[in-house]
Structure formats: structure tokens, C-alpha cells
Image 1 (cartoon, helix red, strand yellow):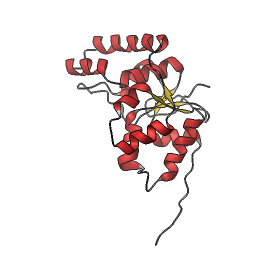
Image 2 (cartoon, one colour):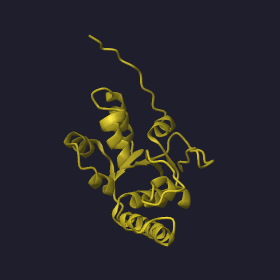
Image 3 (cartoon, one colour):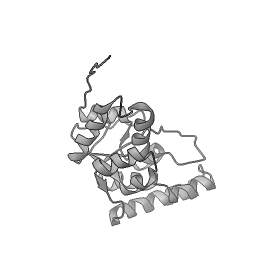
Image 4 (cartoon, helix red, strand yellow):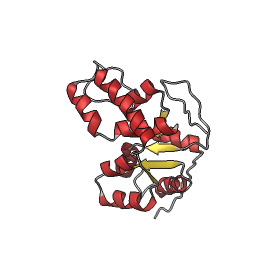
Length: 182
């Protein structure tokens, strides 16, 4: 099954049972702002459920990128299904992407240098090599110069991507309110 979500820059479709690889910003933003574990335990149980089924993956480079808070790191260690970006298929895909970034006049020298050392390119390369959908909260920006956004790379290499909310919808997740008010 090849995941193919709709996004504003693509007319691709998705199946509900496809796998996703998570950008660190999905976990970090959820932990801090969007779905804090004390208020939205169902969100985190949902992630755990789909990680157990190996429908949500965390790349080794993303795991390394998340440096805090310690509770999030512990949760990731306990529940994350980790996958290695150190395979020939991923390295080959990353090499294509690196060549495109380096030859692209749109990006600044610092964006090009940062691309080589950041997890983002490896994450897109993994999704490309394994035909997964990449879940990220980044947005496509055709005019960006100072960095290489994940959606821009995904668009260039026809890698499917979506945000957290769309990923949850594609997976068929539903959350119900439990009022335990005092």
C-alpha cells in the first residue's frame, strides 16, 4: 500500500491503512502545545497504537534530533518504533536530494550547508525509498531561501506528505471528550 494524501500542492490520494514517518516537529509541537499529554492522553495512546502496528515510524535521525523535554524523550524510547536511515536505498535517495539542493540557486549557502547536517533530508529520503507518507507540520514555501523545507523537498521528489491532523484522519483516528470536571 502506497500512502498518497491530499495536500494543497498535490492531487494524490491516500488509503487509510498506509504507514507514515514522523517529523520531529509533529512530536515536539504535540507535546508542548497542540496535544499536551496531561490534557490529551488519547492522542498519545493513538500514536502508541499505530506505532505498535508499525503504521507510524520514527527515524533514527529524528530520535537524535529531539533533545527535550526528558518526559518526551522517555515516551519516545518507550513507545517509538524506530527505523534506520542508514541503508543503501535511503543513502541513494538522499544523494539525489543533496545534489538537487546544492544545484538549486534558490537556496542560500547556509541553507545548503544546513541541509547536509539536518535530519529533514534523511527523513524525506527514507519516505521516498520506502514509499511512505511523511507527517510534518512544516508548510510548502516556494520563495524560501534560508532553509530547505520538508514540503518543498517532498514536492520536488514526489514524496507524499501531510500534517498531523490529516495523518490522524487518514489513519481513521477519532477522539471523544471525557469530562472529569470537579
